[in-house]
Amino acid sequence: MIKRPATAADLPQLIALEAACNPHPWSGRQLEASLAQDSVDIIANGEQIVAMLVSKSLFDEAEIYLIDTLAAFRRQGLAKQLIQGLQAANERIFLEVRASNVAAQHVYAALGFRQIALRRAYYVCDEGREDALILEWSR
Image 1 (cartoon, helix red, strand yellow):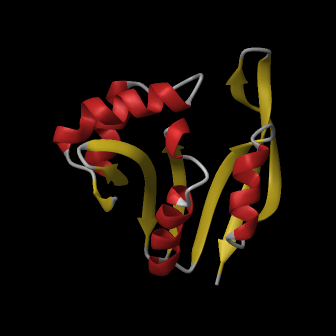
Image 2: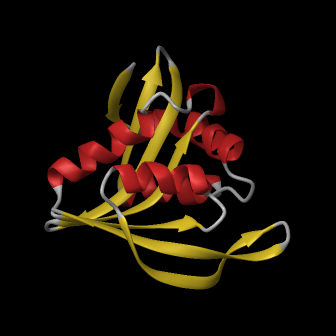
């Protein structure tokens, strides 16, 4: 598997990956804008994109906007690999995670993230709204 920055040619696969991973996915337009404005790193298995991380860095801080891994490739450390790349380049990282996404919370905790806040009713979900945990990692 290869880790690399995403390119505009990857957009159709990024859209498909996001749709496969998120019940309320980002739109193609949002992903296209991220390719132009943010950092989008991917892991590809051959020609297939199986994981991505969308983030924004400013000076020595970053915010993770989105991280996806195809179901068949989860629990192989791909999200961890993408996050560790961001950790190597920054002093602090922030992210939001759904309160119900316990698996992701365990990954973040293992990487040294800690909860610093709670945003009530932040995410749209099938039942209405769901809280977001605000996490921070720092050196």
